[in-house]
Length: 167
Image 1 (spheres, helix red, strand yellow):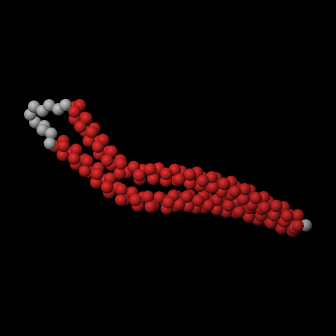
Image 2 (cartoon, rainbow, N blue to C red; image 1 turned 135 degrees about the vertical axis):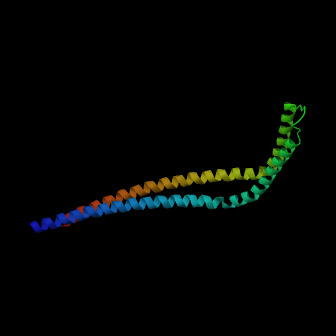
Image 3 (spheres, rainbow, N blue to C red; image 1 turned 30 degrees about the vertical axis):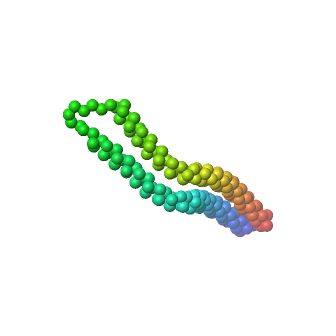
């Protein structure tokens, strides 16, 4: 009787250790799953945006050229202003001229970029929808994982009880 008691106690303690190991494994797997879900979400977003990033490279060059041209033009205009002698400048007229030049540059540049901006607006809206859907899927995955964990713990407990009853 003493030998059987000792044997049962050893089995009971080993079951406790097995349950602890299973819990640790579930925690590790849950962390791995979360990491993989994050990586998947980020890579899907980046993959979807790659064509637009490639298009931006083409736009960036023209944008940089027009910006540097405007900067050079303003710089050259300011260099032509005489700074010695009895110079009188009307700040109002200068501000109006600079404002007019900025508007002309902006309108011309804006008109050429307007179709791209509208396209990006629709794409950003679609991306927001995809992000919302992905968020819902991740939350559903988390709840399903929690249910799976609880069921696994219950299964281990029931197996332990079954083993005790069989002994």
